Every structure is written in C-alpha cells, then in structure tokens.
Amino acid sequence: MPHASAPRPAKRPTLADVARASGVSVALASIVLREAEGASGESRARVKQAAADLGYRPDSRARSLRSSRSRTLGLALALGEPLHAELADALYAQADQSGFEIILGATGRHRDERRVLNTLIDAGVEAVIGVFPELPAAQLVQVSKQLPVISLLRKVKGIPSVITDEAAGVEQVVSHLVQRGHTRLLHLDGGSAVSAKQRRDAFIESAARASASGQILPAGPDEATAFAVLREYLEKTPQAERATAVLAFNDRAALGARQAIDLAGLQVPEQICLAGYDDSEFARLAHADLTSVRQDVAALAQAAMQAALNSPGASSTHAPQLVVRGSTGQRRA
Image 1 (cartoon, one colour):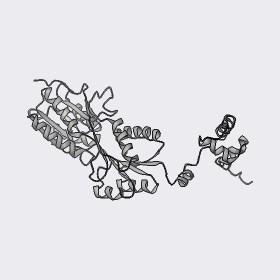
Image 2 (cartoon, rainbow, N blue to C red):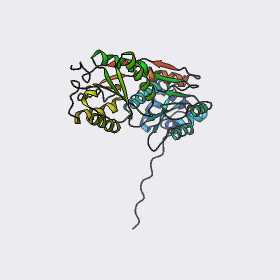
Image 3 (cartoon, rainbow, N blue to C red):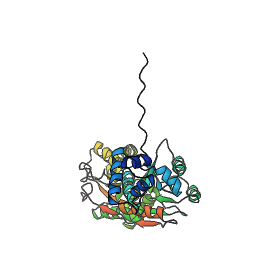
Image 4 (tube, rainbow, N blue to C red):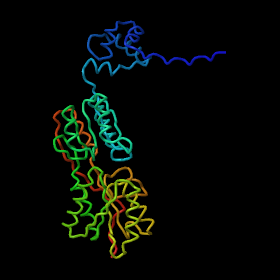
C-alpha cells in the first residue's frame, strides 16, 4: 500500500489573497498596508483584519528590489563574548527605530573575519558594522569603497571608528587599586583580542605615573587561558614578590583568574584584589562581585548606527566608567 504523501506547506499569502479576502482591489489593499492615504476607515479595517487572519507579511526581498535598497545592515561580532552580545542587542534596538533589519555574521574559530565580511556583502547589506580585531586595516578600507564599513571597538584609519577611551578606563582601575594601597600590579593581557594593545599600553603608562610596579602577563580573552597563566604565576612566584592586585583583560578572563586565585588558597580581596573590564553580565554575578570598567554600550551602538546610516559616517570615542564592587579592597599590611 503506497504511503500517503506528506502535506505540502501552505503557500505564503500574497497581497492578492488579502485583497480577495477583504473584497477590495489589489491597489487599495496595497495603499492600506503601506499606510498611505486614499482608503476609507472601513476599508482599512477590513484589509488589516484579512491580512491578520491570513498571516500576511510583505515580501521584503521584493520590496528591496523595487526600491533598490535592502534596508539591512550587516553586523560582525565574535561568538562567546558577553560584551558583543550586549552590543548586538543595543544595535537591534537602534535598527528597529531606524526601520532597518540586521543580518548577524558571527566570527569564531571556524569563521574568520574576512569570510564573515564577504558573506555580509554578498547578502546585499547597505553597510557593515563590525568588531574586526585582526583583519588588516587596508582590507577594511578597500571594502569601504564598495559600501560603508564601521569599525566597532577598534580604531582603523580611513573608516569611521566607534571606540571606548581604553586609556581612561585602565587609568581609573589603576588609580583605584593604588588608592587601596597596592603597589605591585599585574595585568593579564588579552593577546590579539580587540583593544588588547590599547589596554596593555595604558596599564604600563598608568602604573608608571602612579609609581607602582606594573607587570604584564601574556594571556588571552578567555577563562581557560587566564586560569592557566595565573595559576602558573602564583605557583612559581614567591609570595613576597607577587602582585597584590590583578587587572584582567576582560570579565571572562577575570573569572578564569578567580579560579586560579581560589585554587591557590588566596582570599579576594583580603590577600589579592581582582578587577575586570567591560562590566558584562559576568561581573554582575553575585558570586563574582567583580570590580570592572563599564563600556557605554548604548552610546557605542547609537554612534555606530548613525555612522552606518549617514555616509560618510563620523568616528567617535566614548568615556568608560569604573564600577567598584567587592573584588577590590584595602590591601592588608
């Protein structure tokens, strides 16, 4: 006995279907659904009710072809970065207010920045906003000749760049720690991550200005690397020579550092202080209680959106703010 064939999916409702169901012409249905003038209140009510009953949605692709605009923006961000997720959420809100959609391109171990950028361009976006820590500036500038490219969190000469004042953020942390009596400071470097060099350089300069000892420990932007690097440091460095305060590249690295500190049997903040950067959701966890530098996500997203929609867009730098929590405190003598 032959098997019954699976039911075919229902055809997507068309404008003609809405017009037929509401008893008006296609032209009048179009006027109503475009919120244009020229339809009576009764006709508008019938058409909108028919559209709702049928589940009608305008075909954005066809509309884009007619208008020669896609009204979409590309957004390139890294997987696994809490700050990037917060930026994406803020940018979606900005796009909604401007009548745009966002196509998200996620970079990661199996999708490099160039591939993601090419995919977004091929999708027909009108502009790309992205965090590109490793893609050469020359390539970004070259792409910007085809469509606007806005660099987020990294200053790139030749294209609009929307960044945080990293030096100011690091200066706030270092000053805070020195005021707490710490003179031996350690920075867990972010490797090749976006803003890592700026924070590294700012740490060295801020520690020197404060007459504190500032040591850089090569690490990375993730928990596992920070844990392994700080664990080895604590095991091999004599107690009298250890730093009494640690500034991690970001909050993820700070959580890894906290694991290493706990494993070494040290108390935070009594024996060693710990600070992060970004003030992400990780910093705000009750058990982390992490002092961190807050980036102004709303301002960054708004500036990036304005730069994308107003070519040539403007670069901008935004002030961070130190948020003090329980992971930093007065150093014991």
